[in-house]
Length: 123
Image (tube, rainbow, N blue to C red):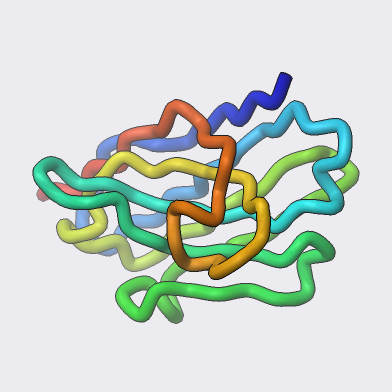
């Protein structure tokens, strides 16, 4: 059974940094692309970042480009999202997910999701 467990969320002030982690219990974790999405209250789930299975390709939403960095450790079965210069509009529940192929920026290309971790950016 595939499990994805996110951690690292919290309440921070604008301009602060956070690092989210996702631990995956996937036997073949190394062969899957992984992604981070977020969902704010009343809004649809949106793409944040994704990384190819071998880690040499990364993709970012325009809204986070230059501030967020996704990384993947195949030896530890983890995918992380380093976030700097956080803004109030980054407030959302953040989810990691495993890709099944297709367009890496759309939620329907992912078949397993974590439970989410709350990130709140407020002064």
